[in-house]
Image (cartoon, rainbow, N blue to C red):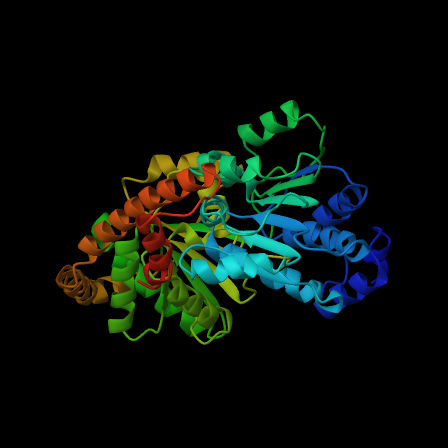
Amino acid sequence: MTAFMELGLNDWLARQCSTMGLNKPTEIQRNCIPPILKGEDLIACAKTGSGKTAAFALPVLQKLSEDPYGIFALVLTPTRELAFQIAEQFSVLGKPLGVRVIVITGGLDMLQQGVDLTVKPHIVISTPGRLADHIESCTNFNLKRIKFLVLDEADRLLEDNFGSQLEVIFKVLPQKRQTVLVSATMTETLNHLQEITMNKPFFWQQEASVATVEELTQTYVLMAADMKDAYLVHIVQSFTEEHPHSSIIIFTSTCKYTQILGMIFGDVGFEVAVLHSMIPQRQRLSALNKFKSNEVKILLATDVASRGLDIPTVDLVINHNVPNRPKDYVHRVGRTARAGRGGVSLTLVTQFDVKLVHAIEAYINAKLTEYKTNEKAVIDILSEVAVTRREAEIKLDEQDFGEKKAIIKRKHLQESKDQEILQKSRKLGCKKMNSRQKSLKKTWKKKQKD
């Protein structure tokens, strides 16, 4: 408790940290909380699992307690799941203050979100796309008085396809504000931003010769491509027998393959949670909550789960595919070995992936070691797993899984066109909408449920 107070935090926040099991500040918290409290802009880069969320949440809550009003702070994040996790930390840390936190993401009722925004919560945590939709739809709220703008996982927000959405958001923000950017991977964009920003930010980067934490054991298994699924099943069977209380995250490359693997594991006797972008948001949250609560110990996911999620029981992360970008590897394996705990990452490598693995090793400045497996046990289940996979693929084809994806794309395209109409209305001063525009607003609720 005293250690957090030495950083300049009030005793009530230090006590709240203690109740959460945060007994001493991490390196990023020690270095970044004081400059934020002083009112400085900040760019910070630290390894996954280093306590980045608390590093910005604690000083924001302290500043809020000194002058409470809504909307006080806006936190932008690239994924829905991360938005909900950040909201949870703000709510717990700010409980003595009675902090009001709302999450604005796609997949949920947009009209209800509009109502939530108008009651002036203290903290708004959002993905860029949905917040931009609200801004362009004449929702009765404004962000002109915010004191803090936080970009979590800033590298992805600034480098992926969020540019037009961020432009919409930044236009309605006050120029006089504190800006905080945090990330687990330093990129050229963040370096350039540090150089050109008008308000010279406080910059802190964790010094490390290796891009991943020391407590992480990084391994690989080399195999023929057509044996990958059998190896995966064998590894999970062996690991769960040896570590019955541990949880596993398996990362895959596509929504369809995630679904196929989920069906395979179900058929061979494992209960799993499946998480990808083609699942409705409420089901995504339900799957994640089951995994967090240890009701289900295996999570199959695309990269929607690779950023920021902090689940203490995860002791093994498996890369079913080798990521094309080394920084994606860093974020994936960062789901284990967090906050000083140990963990293992395992990457399934085929003859086509060797160059990708070498690129990852060069990026993290470490060598992956071989993970021991029983090849005979793999061969014994090879035929069974292959048949199960073919049956899963047939079932998905019968369910028109690929067609559903095309429908979702068409739906998003139509929503974009609808938003253009609503935006034009806003530019005209939000005058009385014509019948087409009225019908669009009435169908928002129905669209979000579909």
